Length: 93
Image (cartoon, rainbow, N blue to C red):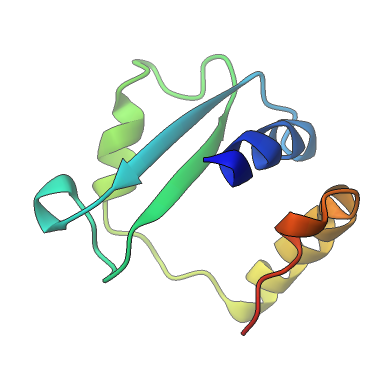
């Protein structure tokens, strides 16, 4: 949760968001679709959904996979914002 606490303000800055929705899905019955526990940290803006809880339906909805290029662009935007927080940049592939 420390990583989420550190990352939250960075995402709010990067996406000009006022709030965050944080969701942990642990197990298939909780909506987990990948075989490891993970945390969704979603930047939120006023009016992004008509009803706030609609975000959970959006999480579950089928979506087109993001391209490697789109993910690389997002990483290029976020990486400098994370530079002052070393523990956010220690992911090893």
